[in-house]
Amino acid sequence: MPIYVIQRIGAIIVMVAVMSVLVFAATHLLPGNVVTMILGEYATPEAQAAMEKKLGLHDPLPVQYWRWASKFFSGDMGESLVTQQPVATVVWPALQKSLVLAGVSLACVTLVGIGLGVLAAVRKGTPFDHAVSLFGYLGISVPEFFWAVILIVVFAGAFHWLPSFGYAPPNAGLGRFLSYLILPVVTLSLTLIAHVLRMTRSSMLEVLGSDYVKVARAKGIPERTVLVRHALRNGLLPTITILANDVGFLIGGIVVIESVFGFPGMGRHLLSSIEHHDLPMLQAMVLILTVIYAVTNLGADLLYAYFNPKIRYGRVVS
Image (cartoon, rainbow, N blue to C red; front, side, top):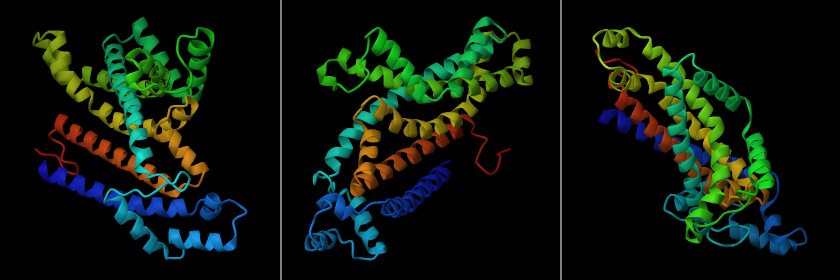
């Protein structure tokens, strides 16, 4: 296990290094001129030349990459080309808000998705099972932005229960803080809950019909013990993989949902940096989101190995 952990961490370091090259290259292929974005269309040639020299745009791309990467990985993300403020002063507060939004959404997806999936499997064929299955089908069939529109129309437009746009910090009061968080969290969670509950129900039904569960029941072991000690551990293994994959959907969904609800997190600033060709801001945000995704996948792999110690990824221990 320690060797596996070291190998996975080494693979993530290599992946982040490769991604930093791709992010740097991709951002330099964006349409538009950085100097024009900063100085405007009517800047003199002398001013444009001075700005190009200041930004180091005449240096070869490998030199520009090394200068950017060495500063970034030492903690200096540079300055925004639009506001002339340090990128870190925007990125870290936005990251904290997005982590809260993603963390609460992932907790809802895990608890509700696994809970509904297990109950549906245990109560197979009942009206509850049919209702959960119908919700799962609708959840994966309807895109997130559609849920966002429905929720805004109902809870913000019709009943005026919740705000549809903006953000309130925690020091504004817990109720006010949560009121701005509920609709984005529900919108992000609905589709992912459907993914998780469908996988959990399917895998639990397979485990509950296996021979070792039948033997446990034949021995007179109480049903609750059979479910908790014998079925859940193996039944949740595929769900762990689904949850890890859903983190990627969650990160992608945040970019859209934060813009829809005016939530000032990483996603909203990411779109703004693309619109204004703010390369240092864009590079920092994309790379940070990449690292978060890689670390989350590492956590899922370690959790998978913990629940299934026979697996050593490539060989099976007899």
